[in-house]
Length: 190
Image (cartoon, rainbow, N blue to C red; front, side, top):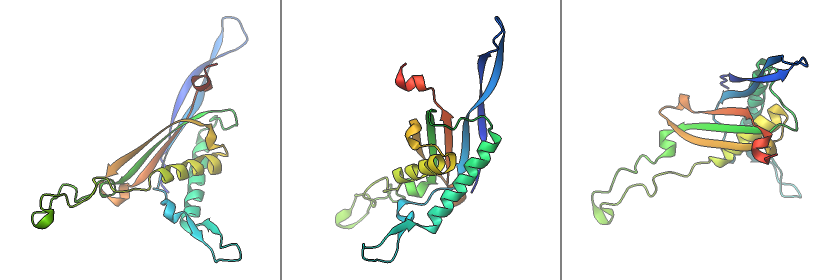
């Protein structure tokens, strides 16, 4: 599990109680982690032997390992980010950049056309962008970071951004997660 930590500080004025004086306090309001690419939904769960209830479903070893590794990465980051708020009141902004192989994002045969037969002139690939288990990976990373590692609830994510980005080789596949503290008044208007 890879981990790169970046934190941003926000200076907030705090009153000291003495008229005309103010103190400045540094609060940590975001962190960024680089994690391995999570497993696809098809590899998250395994079916156990069928019983009288038709069998049970459990986390696969790969998914359980990913969840534990993510938990460790987030907790290691939070140790370095003393002061990052984790409570039931805080709202968060979460950004995910998922780096896939270019061949996973665009069919390599899209630019090729048949040169003979009844398909002459037609593209060799039926669609430019192949199906990719993207949304479910986003949800899995959110759950791993929020529920398992932070001990917070992903219902506290009030804003998010997800992007698919292309890389050239397998070693570059990754997910970059940024969690930022949001301003509650931006979402509630009070």
